[in-house]
Structures are given as C-alpha cells and as structure tokens.
Picture 1 (cartoon, rainbow, N blue to C red):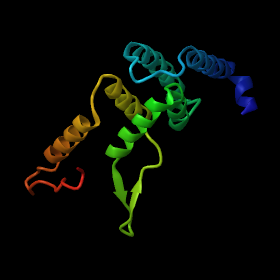
Picture 2 (picture 1 turned 90 degrees about the horizontal axis):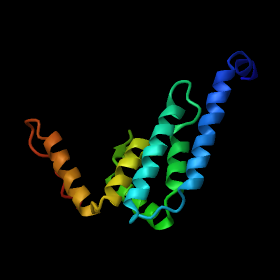
Picture 3 (picture 1 turned 90 degrees about the vertical axis):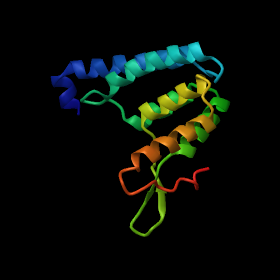
Length: 152
C-alpha cells in the first residue's frame, strides 16, 4: 500500500480530501430531527455527492461505513423511526434449512430513500401499503397473487 501511495500520490490526496469533506459535513450537520426537512435534505445532497466520490473505484470506504456515518448525523428518535421503517420492509431470505435470514446491512441508497420518505411525511402504513401493492403487481405473472396477508 505504501508503494502505491508513493507511485500515485493523487490517490492519497483524493482519499484525504474526501474524508476531510465528510468530517466537515458531519460537524456542520448534527442531531438532525425528523421535523427538519430542509436541513435534512441539504445534508443528504452534500452527503450523497461526497459518498459517490468515496465509492468510485478505487473505493476509499465501504457502503456500511457510509451508512453508519449517515445515520450518526440524525438524532436518536429519527434513528429509531428509520430503523423501524427499514426493519418492517426489509426482505427476508430463506436459507437451505428453511430458516429466515435478514440481510446483514443496508444499502446506503435504500437508507437515504427511507429517511427522505420519513422527513417528507410518509407514514409507515402508507409505505407498507405501497410495498404490498408493488409486490402483488410483481407476483401477478399468470400464477395468481402471492399471499401477502401475513405482512399486515
């Protein structure tokens, strides 16, 4: 790694510059509440812009680190509501033994999308209805509807 940094110093400067930008951003926007829509959306725009630079190859950070950093900037109540929103609609996978297994981590884009829905006033019930409806439409391929009554 050191040899790579010596041969390509722009990688180091890009990495340091982008990480510094994230640090400055997280210092500027702290404890954002679910009621601060404009403040949150300004933070989101800046964060997404910097995160995209971080994830470009060669990536200088991972999705999980960016998700953690993003969520750390919203207050605890917003975090709890977002976590509830994500857990209610998270897809469950069935392994070879018939046991359910929830995905280990969330995609940054998905987390941000759900956070935007929350600050925009979408309720969990509205989101569940939309999820069920879209699942019904996806599963309508001639074999009938998939039973989604267990979701509610």
